[in-house]
Amino acid sequence: MPIYQNDKKLKVDREVNCPPNSDFIGLGWDEDSKTGRKHYRRFYYDELENVTDVMGDNPSVFNSYDLKRGQSRGADVSFISRITNKFKTDASGSVTNEKVTGKFKAVIKVESMEEKSAYETRKNDLIHELTENLT
Image (cartoon, rainbow, N blue to C red):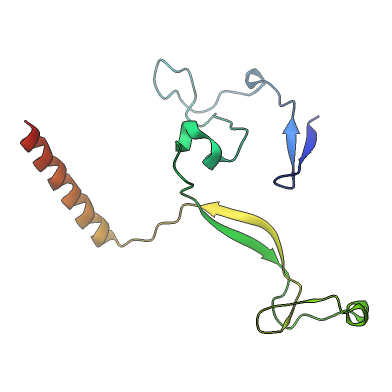
């Protein structure tokens, strides 16, 4: 049975005393004959953007968006909140009960097929020209 410990920084429960890798079935295939590591059987104990082996020392490449719950405009104010005057309003003055409940992180790219093809062709031409100049 897993044991969870509260992570105060991220406000989540994390599994501690994880079972050893030998307890898992090795699925997937080896990247090469030397590593003995399955292609997707890697586990990192921190957020991926904080792992320098994967991301290097570069700043995070992930787009990050707050996940919210609640109503941003037109929320009902409870009787107790009206009496104590403890309710939140947004920039327009409307009552809100919106709360940030998490984060969505992803790398999002939007591009057209034509522009990507033109970019790849130009990049290949530049690499070819550079190689010729070096030789």
